[in-house]
Length: 324
Image (cartoon, rainbow, N blue to C red; front, side, top):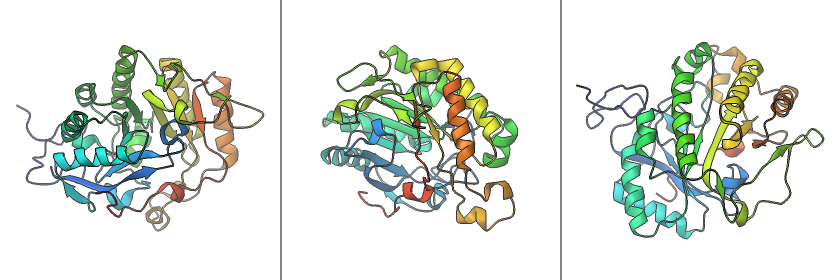
């Protein structure tokens, strides 16, 4: 009989009431920040911000992690399920567009309970599940009545790359299974939904090198339900990125939005190590533009791209337990 933690595909079976699991966390909920966040995709942050709740710990521990300061579980403030529910409500009072759960996998059960309690007290904004993509189908299924917007990464298609950078050679298989279930849930609920409208298409443009859209994002262009899949181009890895974009487009079409990210910047722990020399440089802008052109060529329409000279550091908030 299985015992211990089975919340993610690691299935480490650790008794997290007694010791830390692979995620770096025990069973106590550790939150490192809860505040409005302006740096998500436009339909998530809008002009008022997303209510981002950053959890300590992670089931991936990617070697290039931008949130390494908290991903090992070494920081954060312990909160109860009841306090977590209060945090959600306090963020809602700040007029954010959603509750954005950042790296939530290892607290999925507690989050489900906290959302249930908060909804009793009139939590009515969407709940975003912002994860690394390495999810178990069972956990995703258990959150069907909790999550409105799924926002997973889709990092790798090659088992070798996944093993080298995240120690999970089965990443592609597990991420695809989980994404299938996320898309199934959204389809079952009626498909992608934006406020005051049922559809919203963004088109990649050759001329502008960016997304063309008929209106600016306002409170009427905010996603209420859907799936946004994020993929960050790694240096020299455009071949694998093309394979990922083709897979996502052929399998899901316009049922998902794809965020093609250029923001990779080598963090100090990478620059100070000789283990991953290929990761010690930023992504070449020409390489990223070629990836965007490829997305256009294969027919991807629902996509977000990033402007030039996006520095990763600009997206990293201070993990100072604000709002906790």
